[in-house]
Amino acid sequence: MNWVNEINNGLNTPGIAALLTGLFVFAGSAFYHVIKVVKGQTKDWQTFLAALVPMITGTTYLTILLGSGAMQLSDGRIFHIARWIDACFVSPLIILSIVLLLGPLIRKLTRPVTLLLIANFLTMFGGLLAGLQTEPVIGWIWYGYGLLAYLGCVLLLLFTIPKAAEKLSVDPGRLKAYRRFAAIYVLITLAFPVIWLFTPAALGQLTLNGEVIAFLPFDLATKVGLMIFVARKGKRL
Image 1 (cartoon, helix red, strand yellow):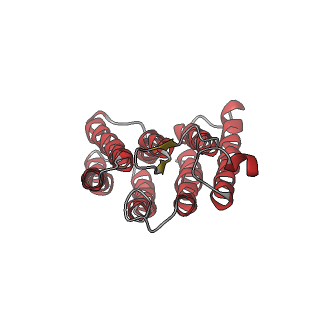
Image 2 (cartoon, helix red, strand yellow):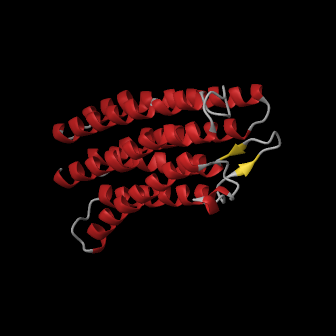
Image 3 (cartoon, one colour):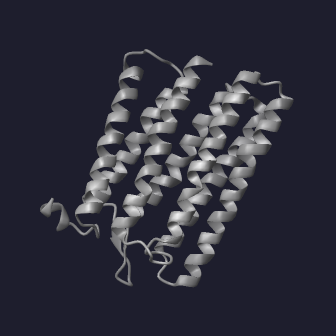
């Protein structure tokens, strides 16, 4: 891995090994779902999204590994900007996959779902802007902005949308599946703002290698594990 160490991604062997691990798992997961889509074995949107999400995130890991998705800020800190650009688009796709467990979007659900996706995008966008700051106060303002957007996302995901679905007499089996996977998503993603607190962009208790290693299991849990189970459930409903 010495040749990779020469690329300006700020990582050494442990961080690179974590990226390679994630890259191979994402590639395998994407291939598993793409084969099903190509062969026409399934027509549900969850399988398509389960292929798309690890495909995008695997590409993101590759850009960081090759240094294309990393940048050096004015204070000398290396920031993996690709991770947060990825999160801005991939996280809403994960949520959309969960929402589609309710069935084809009913007209009266489109507004809260749209608001949910925007709130989720703004959560990740806040993290992106916070990480780009070299002035700590501004960084914390954007972090707080992201937390507020995340709170809105959680409220919409766990309360507003299921209540609206109940009023629209959505199938109880679909509603139960939605509630279960929405709760799992929230429980897993609570780790991301906590980990961010200890990254070099915030308190600095983690090195850049430590940041990559800390995020890896939660990336795998949401973008591989959760997507597999949501796709399986979507196929059965």
